[in-house]
Length: 336
Image (tube, rainbow, N blue to C red; front, side):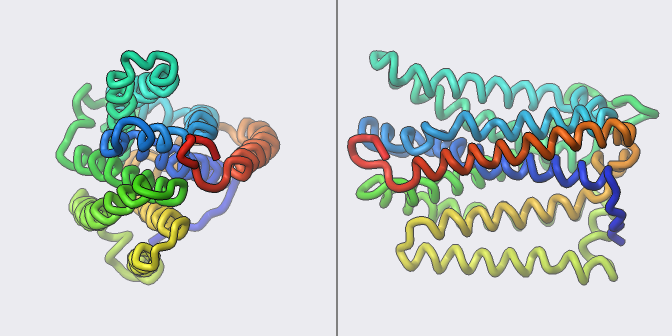
């Protein structure tokens, strides 16, 4: 049965969850653009695709810093357990993001080697997305903990389940990228993005089903939350809403709309994120450490909460302003 005890620790868990979701939403689509980059012809198609995310891509990663920093500050025990268990995929993610960022800048400044930087942009995006998905899968399948220390091995994160979640995140980000490009581009690049979105849509549905079934097979704790009464009366609303969002996406694609497919794909991501929260709650490391076990002292949480209540609205404000300023289509000349 789900436990609804809304105290200061729960507030911090919600703040970090929101920061992670904001990162997944906003950096997910620009990682998706990188994943799909090689599907667009060199020249105008790739230039316009890259320019569609140029004003916002680096600001999107602010949320990753907030989520990681918040985890370290508000849940130090979880940070100390998760990092040693997942060093390899986390380092791979950071290297992918760094290499991708370098490629983003140098493809304009080093036109003689643009093909190399285009490949680096795509490769960095795929590695970062795959590593994020593997990290998620490794966390869901559980981390070996003895006392207050990680007790597993270096390769414990690498399993068929974590690879499944890794590939699923890559495909999901690609769908976000395709629908973003549908929204931001017109003409032949828009049509190409739409064709990709249709294919990725069916792939994402297959991934949602596969990951959902595989998660239930991980342990009785997950099955109890999703299949046993009385929890099922609440949790069953998530798959129901997912079906509704799927129908909304299908209808938006059929009606030749530009922005709605992107918004409905975000809705699908939001519902899968809610499903992740249901599966993990109230643990921060499933089956091992709850959010209350991992929480920092109450005075520390209060002190940090004051800063978060000041900083988060500022981040939201400048992010919203950037998206507003650079709204609309990216023209053939590469500008909004």
